[in-house]
Length: 99
Image 1 (cartoon, rainbow, N blue to C red):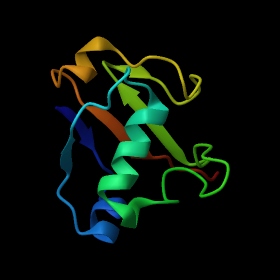
Image 2 (tube, rainbow, N blue to C red; image 1 turned 30 degrees about the horizontal axis):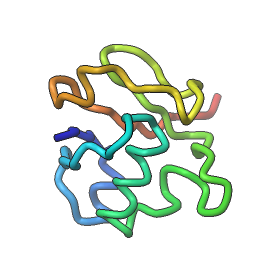
Image 3 (cartoon, rainbow, N blue to C red; image 1 turned 180 degrees about the horizontal axis):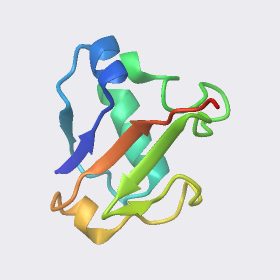
């Protein structure tokens, strides 16, 4: 089971708790496969984390796991093993911009 922590605005939008659980996708766990599974299970999140068409991470969204910023990693890079085992969550954060 893969654990995903959602930011407050996505929790409210989709009516979900802070942490959701997903079955580990077959064939390896990457950002792409995890987000595909998340959007398939919770369609209200479609287009909120990634662009609907390009599937590219939205600019003000960041990904963290195992105390590492994975936001700029390739979408098909393997996620840490601890995430796939459910030992560590995959965290989606809404970034803050401004000056």
